[in-house]
Image 1 (cartoon, rainbow, N blue to C red):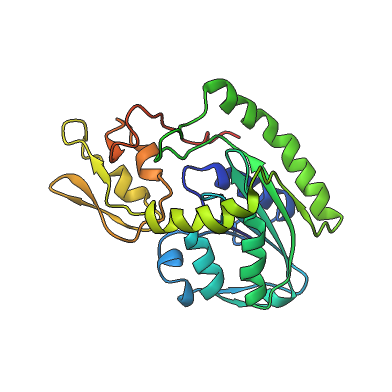
Image 2: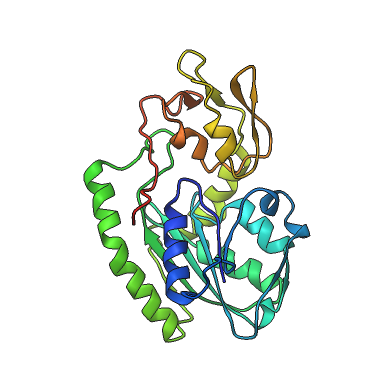
Length: 264
C-alpha cells in the first residue's frame, strides 16, 4: 500500500512510481491511497487494512524540515488494521534538505505501535514561495532534478528490496534545530490561510482552485475564491491558477509557479 499526500504533484509522481513497482497488478489502484478530502478532514473515520508483512510506504512533501501536519494527524488518528505487522517505509520529496523529518515520522508511527523501517528523500523541484528568499527553481535546476528522478527511485527500490532499515536522505546543516525549532515556529506562524487573496482583475472565476483543494477549504463566493481555516498550506491553489491571480500577502510578489509534469 502506498499512502501519499501531495500539493503540486511531486509526491504524486513518486507515489505512482512506487505503486507501479510494488503493486503492478493493482489495476484499480486500491493500494494507492491519496490523502485528500474526507480522508484529511476526518482521519479518525477512515479504516485501512493490510496483510501481515505487507509494504506500507508513506509519501509526502517536506514542510519546513518536517512532516506536513495533516499527514501527522492522519497517522495519529486513522484506524489501520494490521499496521503493527506491516513494513513501513517513508519517502519524502523536498527541494533541498529534510532535517530530521524521518525522526518525526518514526516517532508518530512508534506511538501507534507500528514499526518504521527505511526512510528516504527525493529531490524534486521547489514549490515553497511564501517567504522571502524562497522561490521555484530555475528551469535548468528543475530539469536536472526531474532527470535524476529515475535513478534515485531505483536506489530506493533496491534499498527496500534488501530490507534497508536506516535513513538515506539529505539532512542538511543544523538538522535538529530546523526540525525541532523552526518547524514548530512555521506551524505556529506561517500556516495561516488568511493571507491568500485572488486579484479580482485577473481572476477568471474558473473555480480550479476550489475544485482542486485537498482540504475542500476554498469556496467560490461572488465568483471569486474565499479561503476557510482548514488549510494544508500545500500551495496547490497558488501554483495551479492558470492566470497567476492568487497571492499570499506580499510574499509571493514576483514569484514563479510550478505544476508537476504529468508524463513522468
